[in-house]
Length: 337
Image (cartoon, rainbow, N blue to C red):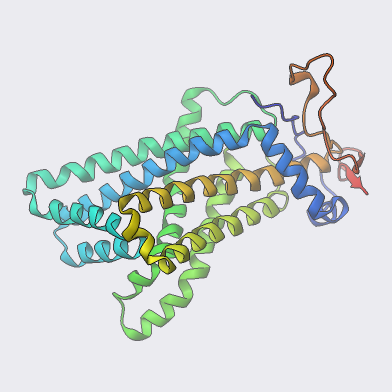
């Protein structure tokens, strides 16, 4: 159960600067307090749920791509999908997926539409479920105990799945499969693409994080400058996780040969979990920075806990931080060392 203190809405405050508040509270203290906020809001449980939904979306999306390649009958597209799978998935696990591409082309024309339809519908439904879980996780981080009504929640979740979800998918493809995509270009274009795909992918991730941090929580969010530090941290962590796992399995080529398809499953699940933690932790940083802005440094609400009378009280916030609240309209609070 989430016991995170509610973050006051500060969207109406002006005359202050996010960088000044960040410098006042200190990066180390902010990151430490944000980790505590993530923990008391049950963020790691939400991350596990998001990881499960993300893994389903990836598998369903792959089924849709294979179905699309089979429907259009484009052998070049099929070969590109096969090369990308072999590059991204280690060892025998790739053969399981590439066999699916071959089998899709061997089926009759009427059967080729089925994986495209089922994969697309499944990815949309699971993607909306993922965004609904993300809203719940972000709400608890901000101390909001009630999600939107179901109709509003999942309508917004579907929109975010199509917009922010596609941006994230495009960035993932560029990170993981960018080199294989570039092989379809000429030598000159391949060199340009190999350089340009990195900033383009990071740009897609930034756009996705902006959408999620801005619209997913059930509250009025502050200006983008107050969300930028947490969003940038999520982008850096997500990119590092994606690149690290790709490098790990490229270097350890024998790992896939030893453990077979389990290696690909393990890689997928680890990436999904760490990606979800990266997003939620960045949101916790943004929430804690806004809480400091409002002059409220308490992270955990004591009234939400079922405490033993003889037990010592829990740590509510950093003991070395003192709030200095400011008047509304003049910039909110500052945390002094």
